[in-house]
Amino acid sequence: MKIKFTLHISKTIFTLILIVQIIALCTIDDYKPYQLYKLTGYIKNISAKISQSKLPEVSSINLTCKLHRLKYYNVTDNRFLYRYQWKNLRDCISQIDDMRQLSSFPNSPTSCQLIDQTRWSDTIEFYGERIFGLIRPVKTAYYQFNIITTGNAELWLSQNQYPTSLRRIVIMTHQDSSRRRIISDPIALHGNQSYFIEFLHTNIAMRGYVAIEWRYFDGLKRSTFEMLDGRYFQLPSRIFYKSRSHQIYRMTISHQEIRKLNITIPNNNYTTYTQPLLNVTISDNLLPKCSYKVPSYISHHRKPVKDWEGDYLARGIVRHRFYGRLDFISLNNDQIQRCSPRLDKMKAVRIVSQYMKALDRATNQSIQLIKTISVEEKTDDNRGKRYYIELLVKYRHTRQLWRISDYLYQPSYQSQLCQLMDMKWNQHIYVNIVIVVQQQGQWIKYFIDQVSRYYYQSRDEHFGIIVVDFGSTDINIYNELHRSPLKNFKIIQLGTQYPRFIKTIGLNRAVKAVDNPNSIILIFDLHFNFPMDILDNARKRSFKGKTAYTPIILRLNCYATPWNPNGFREIFGYGILAMYKSDFLRTGGYDSVNYREQWGGEDVQMINSIFSHNIDIERVCHPTLYHHYHRSLPWKFL
Figure 1 (cartoon, rainbow, N blue to C red):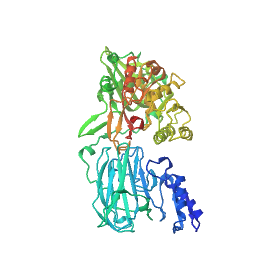
Figure 2: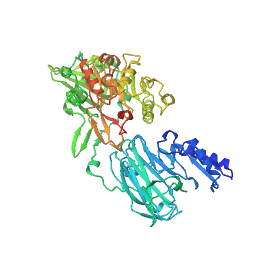
Figure 3: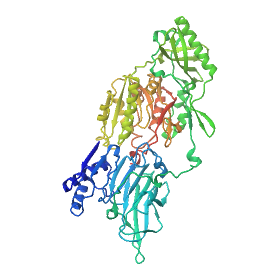
């Protein structure tokens, strides 16, 4: 929204303009311990200056504050510097060049402020900032700048008031959270002359710190270092400019930094989750009927498993062999790696052929196979092999595609397949998506946007969201959900009862709020994308009293995106979990006694508890489920 003022000589109007500027420029929620003017204090101090200074020669001011973006304006009597910050939750900022590479750099920060001194601290991590404006020394002398900071920093100084002649006078590079000092070479500056200055800073650790000081030597006296403040500051007439300080200087990256996990996902033009299932009366009478008994390998998991034994648990879970779309691969150091073991093509063809022959007999060859989407095999060495097939078919002389999604079994003592009648599912089982949050406003918006996108494309009416909130103050969760197309939601507020974040208590409380014990619980996380088939997988892989589903996900590295994935597979993490509410209650839920305020381990405990109640784990690679790189969460440091 643009607000245009035409100035005439009026102190009252000038004061009003300054109020509007501060509302536009400052992010009120982001005030830090350093001396940033609060709105009331700023107005008070500026009003006192009006009587001492002339009205600046400004004919009009155009302000645009959407996304904290500033447009050009010209104010010459404000003794401040600009401070722009980039602290988007998904930005991975470590080096100065990382900040320069952002599409929003240098003029579209996530927050913008005016500062009147050069000392401040922050409690976030992985952020970058740019401080710029004019400095005006009071006397002609040689000046040295003293930089004390965490992270990486560059100080640029011009030979005059123009940013085009900026040159770097200080560079500091280190990654830890310690404060380090560096002093510039002496630089000759003229008294009462303006010089353009720009300071770039990135920080990866918690509790970032910056202090910029200077001292002078005029041939007779050497001063001590003192902090720069508003006595020497002046806002520039231009804030949009090109400079060498904004150019990327990194030419090459070390081998360790560029090591990339190249993900290849087989192209599939069929979105099977949108296709209706073939008529049950047809598919239920093709092969001999059988039931799925407790696998013999579950008995190996009866011993208690501690949180650090997730690798033991992962080795013991029986993995599926895949033929078809789910067998995505990666290339790492020229080594081909598969997310899941590969099922022999001939075996997959034999299984599908046997099923289709039975279908032909039942329908008088009226159904035609269009495509084999996937065939999965899960082996119990003592009892037999379980198969899951997913096919696209159509009736001859029609265009309507139908989906076959069926579980089969081959006992170890015979070659004949049978149909698992207790592993039949439908596309309308209600799924309760559970998330537990505290002070994650931007990620909550991202999650709501992702799920809304799923709803718009699928028109799935058979799911809802349960949010357990531990007193978030950075977002109104109800308003965000109410504005979305998602109308089936519950919000449980636990902030008053539990001021500190306790994930296990939040998850158990959410499941308790689910009304239907015959519905599915999907434990989810804010920092994931929401694939279009995630609910489909939860439905077709979770069976009451039989199985629970926990996918293998890809944890993205810095700068990686779902469109350009780069990262590693999370083999030992079980944070995403789907199962029936009745089974969840039977296992006792998450252990909120031994896993209370510490981070991690509760997922391993839960998987072990599921096994101990004779429920099998469906551990399947999901090729498009990604965990975004993000900052460490604040409660991890409590």
